[in-house]
Length: 91
Image (tube, rainbow, N blue to C red; front, side, top):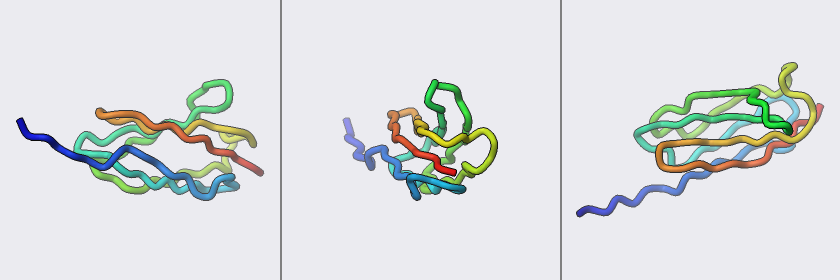
């Protein structure tokens, strides 16, 4: 039986708090890719973005009408795990 070591799943949001654009730095997304989901404070899905195999960054805009000022949960899901970070949007 072989053991496969991979990079732990993680994401970083910059800038945070965000005014117009957020860059997501992604670590640990393997061959299966993943999905980046952003939920508002009451749990409504406001953004869904597919993450490709071994993708390391994603960018999304927060200056549109779907992003009111407030706190959001940014969730990265892959076949091997899930990680969630808090994003603050200011306008």
